[in-house]
Image (cartoon, rainbow, N blue to C red; front, side, top):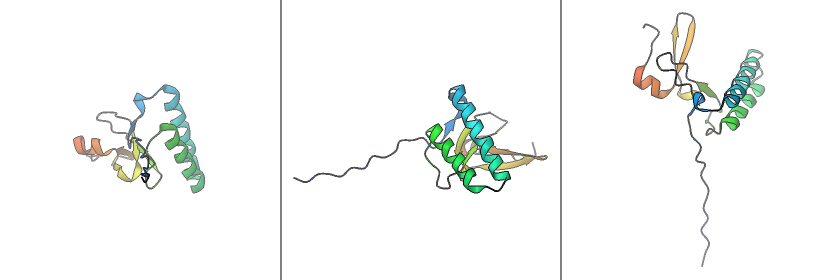
Length: 114
């Protein structure tokens, strides 16, 4: 009798809502993203990628193909979703760029002309 080979799949979510996590986790995520932004400002792409990887591990989110996370800053619902940056929808409102997750973009897409 042969043995079946089974792989274990990761059941990690692809979207995490920060406002549903403990405050310490939210603060740690914010710290890592601030450090990632600082690395990007210095054009240190290695450090930028490392901070995103640390945030992925912290949140337990499924690693995006591109390795980069985005946070929904939708002012219509404040869902605070963290998700794959490649799926982000953005718009400008004056000089401020806002990011929407796929759900917000589908339910109440903003264009900056509101």
